[in-house]
Image (cartoon, rainbow, N blue to C red; front, side, top):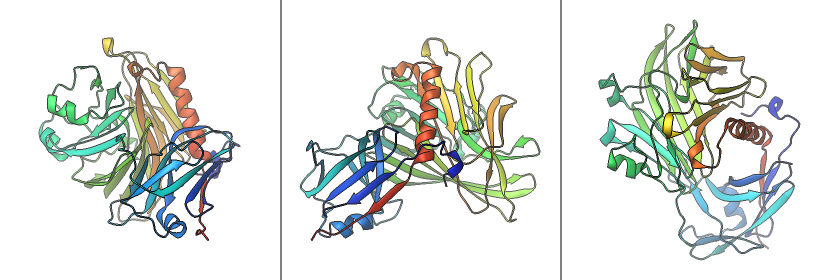
Length: 379
């Protein structure tokens, strides 16, 4: 849940309103600008306004420009549609009207994708049109020299989806023109993993033991990873991590559910591995933003890594070889944060100032966001 204390005086109101049965009005009543934002509209609201909707024969267009709008049915792992996702851009204090109509939409180019990778020691890898990531499965624990606990980054400089190509080639550390894997994780949190923190120590789980793909593109990919019970300062804890990546975003949304016997809240940290060479860091405790612009990795370029936490953090610091932000997982409530990365060779974000500004603007957008949806059937 996004805390009101993080709103920084900036109010965003995105109103997705069914006004004439088959027209959706999405209104941005804030000073924030959104480029390529995935807006979620509850499916029951869509059906209330468009009772004859045919999901196999639907086209959505901008009511003014007539340009087609990319959309996705969101199932959240079930058999029934839960939300209609649309990809739109919104200027400050403006609105866009979308027309729902019968017809075949143009083929959508997938901008997000993820999958279980049994052929590479049970990785789970995912990506969008900006960046790619992976997390490690149980099988990797059998190779201690390769084992790692955190989130890995695969940098890319193409908007194509490239995970399958890289696994097929097997040459992860060579740039074939679309990027590569040079990010080192090891026994750290990598690029923004979260773990319990007690007695001045990070209590690492082992690697994930189960997975479930909830939705898989074209504009949002969501999946869950399950972790077996492990010892956390004398208590047994299990975890389920739900990760979601939207088209165009450098950051994943991460939701972690911890389960354990007692009723206490659980201290947690979100962290980023720190390199031994000089880099640039942003530790903004007030806004709960943790950013790192790594030292240049030779001819491979530079990776930026960042974390944005909607709930308050108690402090941020360098703890051993990691930047960490201290937070609290409230019992029976998901701990939600955002984590991700960028690469200077991609050309969009090329220095620490631009990366830190991206994180600040991202925090402002999520802190102020308030989406209200209403519908009225066509008369």
